[in-house]
Image 1 (spheres, rainbow over the protein chains, first blue to last red):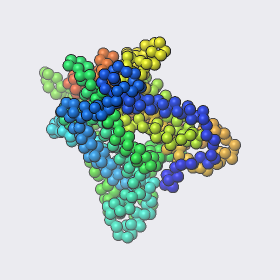
Image 2: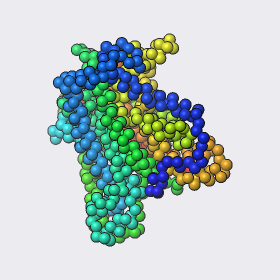
Image 3: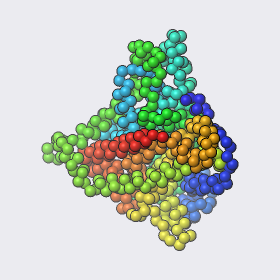
Image 4: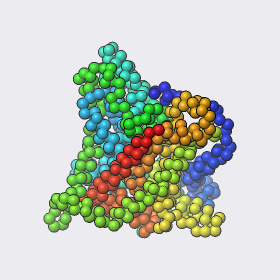
Length: 293
Length: 309
């Protein structure tokens, strides 16, 4: 099966003629995808006045750098704090999730041990449990042990990604021949050493895939920090931006639309860049992992 | 492509069972690898679920304090119109939005896979981009564009000579459906595409030898190979629909009165526990929604894997 993984492109044997009609139809869908992003980029270059008074897809006076400056200075530079928090949540939360999923998926794929079937059943069931259904009881439990309104309240639950474990499990079953592990055992290599010197390299595309999806999940996480945190100094970007959005209405409203659009653009760029740079890895990892027949 | 017993089942035993002696050391190592995940899983998934069930069986009252009430909370939920109107709303959302999104994603994947597109990797990556955009940002963007005066829909309405206001009582569910479709179209497309790319070349050659045209190949070769992917994306979409929270909650802040606090079951549970201090009842609703989701997902999986290709 693993040789299929590497044979991604050009799998349709005969080279069909390019179709202009099909390209045009698909271009319409691309337009649907791109229009909101284009709007965000254009809007980020406008001052607050232009944003309200000009057509959404027309450029106004070029104000991008002033906007960026305002984003980082508004409310005593809290945006920079949110950005830093998000990075911490991503590095520790998604990083930890990747490590746990990789170790666990590998263990499930390549070892037999008592209780494995039970582990399998429980984890599979957990994929169907609505994540948000866990949030309220987790909040109550955390408040009992004094973890709410701390960074740990956001980090700890994001360490567990049943989907990541599943992905890694399927990937490891394919990517690592059992003969290789046996050969290592014959040579007297310990299990952990075999993992770190041999298996990890073969798992690399799977690890990148799991990491990317964990990064997206933590970078975009909204519900969990929303309920866990009271202190704006601990907010990630998502909750912070939504707070600015909420400040645009009601008593003492601050119509900081240009800050919201520019702040949103800045929140999108790193993750999009990560996906583009690593696409070779995650595209092969995903094709092997998520859709095992 | 043998037919799987279950599309969600990875190979359980691997080859290890047959070829290596199941000695103690190896079994211990296996547990060692899974243990860190398992501990976290117990602490942050199993315990909260258990605590939820516990909470749902109790009630906290001013007089009498915390006491056991059996299934009283569940009985209350079954006759709670506010709860069921939310359930109905996400059910409508599920039945309308999910098929539209998945069919579009399927068409995109087949088009990209067909090799008939100019610049296919460009299409693949650009369609996928919205998945990387934080949901909060997606809702904020569309929220601006939905603005009847300054937004995109306003401009379209102006050209057509009508007033289009997506953030209104009648249209807001469709407006949310559009946002969700935008966010997840490319993600689902990618899962379909990945499944298509694992079809062995020999199958295409055999189909071509049999004189199968494009559509015949899609129906007889590609769609059967996509069955597992269709089941997975459907299950994820069902879970997503029943959990609908972010989009209505964010749109609410600037569109007060249009989206009620019981708009979706999740929003209802959130409001009950954080504004209404009714954590026991909120836990009950979370459990009911969890069970409903699991049952629907299970039925989809059964149906999806029963039909043999």
